[in-house]
Image (tube, rainbow over all chains, first blue to last red; front, side, top):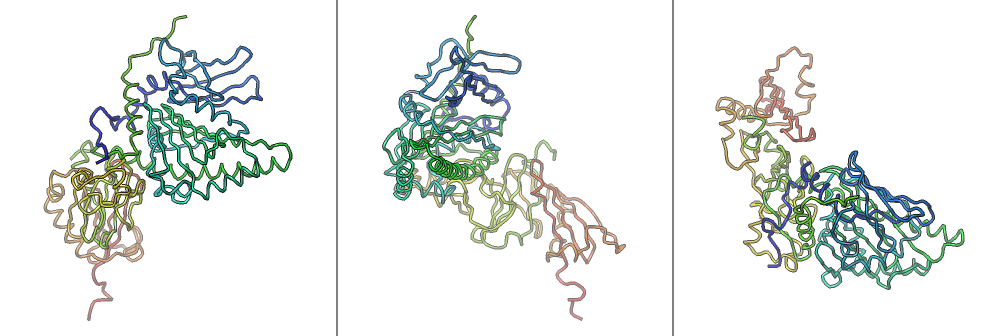
Length: 329
Length: 217
């Protein structure tokens, strides 16, 4: 039997998905402590600023002549941020003594993320889609390979290779993971035509849908080794979250009005497609939010669902840590 | 019975007619617990309306007709609550009979009072007759048999004040508000159980087996 019935201590107690107490503990020990994805700074804006609201904490990162800096507002309390980058991706955490560096936190995917982030150019406006569900339900959903045929029968499911047992490769390292799914031949052909037309900038020659998850709430999706879409799941309340994402469609041809018009058209199509997929995920995440308080058991995890338990174990470890010693100064 | 202990309370759900055909289902919620009653191959059974795999609500609609299949991953359950349709089982779960039984839906309780169907979260506790009292139970049961036909509000009197001047008798049973015009109409208004949204409120209008005009001379 490849299914895993989780034992006590190997998964988060269900009430962490709907209680104020659970979110308060996460605010202190997860979002008040971990490295968090902030965004991609616009190279053309100076000074530039990124903001994020997670679990009641307000993060602001600025780039000015002195470099990157930031602050976290926790109610009336302002706490300095450590800010670092992985390629174009900006991360921050509440300044503290000890803890991993950003490279350690991203391990072993820092280099791969940096490579992919080179394609964070030609940005489309950021998108935020609210879910009436705990943020962790969205994380579980994004690490779930099984729901394509039931939830996305006409979108993602036919877009990836039908023999997914052979053509979906998933690496796990702690709570971080990388899954790489070969595109269906038809989808790969569509991207090849787009590439011929637009001369996409590519970080890799791979006809895949790649998905790198970084604990606790960031994942970077990539298509065809070209388009990249950073996603972040922001907790709003115990039963509410916002999925924030931004599409980058990098092209080497964006000089003429015709090229720009084609790029706009392609980006609009991809935005609509991605939004459609997320709008298919939203009802099932919300169905889990509604159902979880009524379940008596602990579920079961299939061979390709271990990443979800990895995430639970990482959250449990993070919640068990002692309070952070803030640096003096 | 107190509001603090809704799990052991019975709540009116629907009539037998609502669950008469295979795969017909009716849902509600009691506190935080979604419930479903469903006709599965002729057996009417009640479960917590939550998939045991990854905890999604199985049937979102208040009522309908369709297999007991989770919308998230397509797990399908039989009348025992055991998953029988389990996508990717050979490759990714390999659950045998015992493993499937471990993942049976959490049972709920179902009881009938005449043609009326009640559900409860707890699998053990006082019977429906004990909760209602034997007199009220017997009367409700008899009324459900005496008024077997669904009718439109216009047939039973619009609302409870149709201007006819004829009195409606009113009483309550569990979450039911009952209005009776003897020999002519029965109206059942089911309030949503505690924790349930207004969409789980139900109103039914019922007529005798034969109206005066239909009775043989």
